Length: 583
Image (spheres, rainbow, N blue to C red):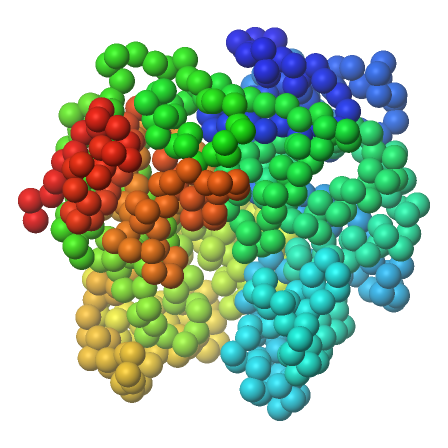
């Protein structure tokens, strides 16, 4: 193999069976999975038989594509049929739910997976029968957030509603209407897939014959239902299953991700082979030492080969109360002084991010989502994210050109347009020449409505639904302000990106500034969370862990000025650099 593997990596690559690989940040997890795929694929015919193939599944398309790209870089042969690299959602949809849902629900019509769940909200909130029957619930509780949990109870946005008889009636009506419309969210698909495997165990046996070897990347983010699906496949005879991840990087509990289930399997020595990757090749040892205390007491220490006397110490930047943005120039100068190129300012959520960018997060001058999507597409284009810009505007274009089509027909047209390069060029020009954001909102609205009518040769002008009166939360006078005052790129004036922690999971930078809040109210994360967890760290602690494990060379923490230097040195040690904003 053309890469230097650690003893831990080589042990995992050469081992088969039911494995839980607990991989620390920067341990080369993606490369290790790619080399495991190479080893298993080469041995496929002699060890695993000639039937079926490997399914390597990750949580997101980005992670899946990274594995596929790493395999192409390191292998001297393609990973072709019968093997596959996909996402766990796509795998469940393609091989369980969609081909076998008729066995569970009856009928012979084809279901579709909804990738834009706001369509479900519009579907029911524009239906007078549902409005009449559930007017006290339908606008307070989005239909798109209704699900079944693993036991079949109604939940909304992850909260159990089984004790509320009126809500249960509402929830079941929504799910029934959704199924009648032949529409499924990915969470619906997972729930139904579990019911299919439980009711028809022969399907599990069929899947195991088709894919005798499963590798699950980012396994800490799999939900309770997805874990149960894997358990059904084990009952069906699956003998080779790798769960690869880092439980301390689980950020999707809002999607019922369960790091505890990952760790339960890791600790189950009787049924699983728990293995570790504990060498961090990304960060310096000084950075590793900052995030390591957020792990369980019984974890093995993380080591880094990047450990020299010249490595930078932790930098703590103190900001005045109410002025966290004042430390960004200090951070920018540090990056410039050390010639760092790839740098990020990280925050907990969009509220603080928008504040640092000067955005008005709750400013909503239009009732239709069309102008917001156009603005997002233009911002993506200005940020050199052309692919994302075209993706954003493609659905709008198809909807405007085909206003009478239902969701399934629109989705089919989207699928047909995937490789339509002429359409992509047209959409690029459409976004590029949108009226300037320097125009007042009222004028920009009128000009952009007419621009779309003329550019797309529409019969009628699309209406954005601009607001016509003031309210407690909206001043009509603001329509005279430019669009650019409220909608901006996610960078500072010197083009330093400001992003949320969720957006950088799995990424690597030269340096990072994580700005912590002044208090712990709501979703805020403060320095108070830098404490050793008794067992599994909380979700807020895991967010900190993910954020501060991204940089290679420099880690900066932004904290309010209320923390004294002695308090900071007590928490992090004497070898830190403390700087303070003059604002």
